[in-house]
Amino acid sequence: MKKAIAAFMIATAFAPVATPAFADDDPAATTLSAQGDATKGKRIFNRCKACHNLTATERTRMGPNLDNLFGREAGSSEGYKYSKALAEADFVWTEGKLDSWLTQPRAFLPGNKMAFAGLRKEQDRKDLMAYLREATNAGE
Ligand code: HEC
Picture 1 (cartoon, rainbow, N blue to C red):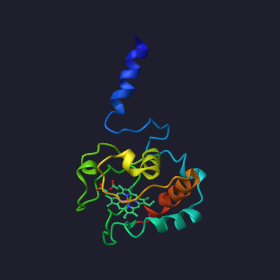
Picture 2 (picture 1 turned 180 degrees about the vertical axis):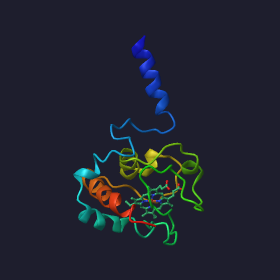
Picture 3 (picture 1 turned 90 degrees about the vertical axis):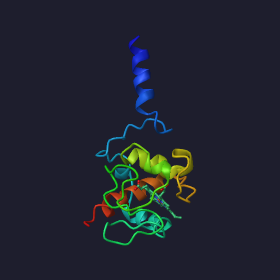
Picture 4 (picture 1 turned 60 degrees about the horizontal axis):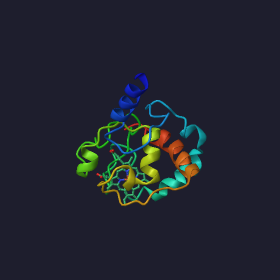
């Protein structure tokens, strides 16, 4: 009986997003970025920067600015016109969520409009996250 309730609660908690539960789904958790190299991550960000700026004062490109990303509600960059999928997504960006998104954006959140196939190498995602931890908190 107890097991059944726990399974139900887990199923409900993760129902809105089709992604496995991550241990590091706490905005404060730095498990993945801690294993990354920010200098390498900065180079990997070259694959994102045609579409994303990292501070709020820079202009918006094709994608939303990623300032203060960790701990921020998904689809909440002010003034940016998101797809319905991302606008209605109900989760906060954590390293766990970002890891799933970057692995395969389309599978993580069907219907989103980010034209990016994904970063398949786990270490690339960790390096990128180490860089984003620094660069998305670099002031306004
Ligand atoms: C071709 C342009 C393009 C590239 C390249 C791209 N993105 Fe995006 N990104 C977008 C668009 C467009 C959206 C908005 C998607 C939507 O509304 O469905 C987005 C959304 C996001 C979001 C959600 C932000 C929020 O406010 O909830 C994150 C995080 C993100 N991208 C990270 C990245 C990272 C990291 C990379 C590089 C590995 C990357 N993107 C590469 C266009 C791009």
